[in-house]
Image (cartoon, rainbow, N blue to C red; front, side):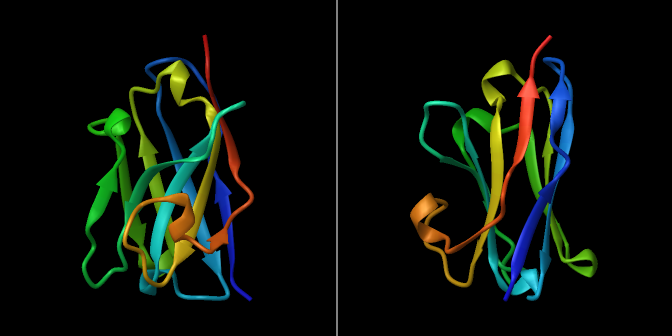
Length: 124
């Protein structure tokens, strides 16, 4: 059975950068849509960014992260990255990656397989 493992979270000052990694095992991630989601305390999980399977490679970004976050794939490493720049305190959340074969929207309900999450804290 396939598994997704997130890494790269941590504590960073406002304006700083982090790169999150989502590494798949048990399946080839380039055949899947991959999404990054986040959940802040007391809030619902929300879509941050998604990337289509590698044959089309289209991307989606939630409005608040456009121009700051970049999603990308390294198929040789079976890994999808989320480069996060110019981080703000409101980016603080647990970040999750998710995978599914066929996705119409970058939304929680579109994805069936989830990782355990990695904490990102933006604070001075």
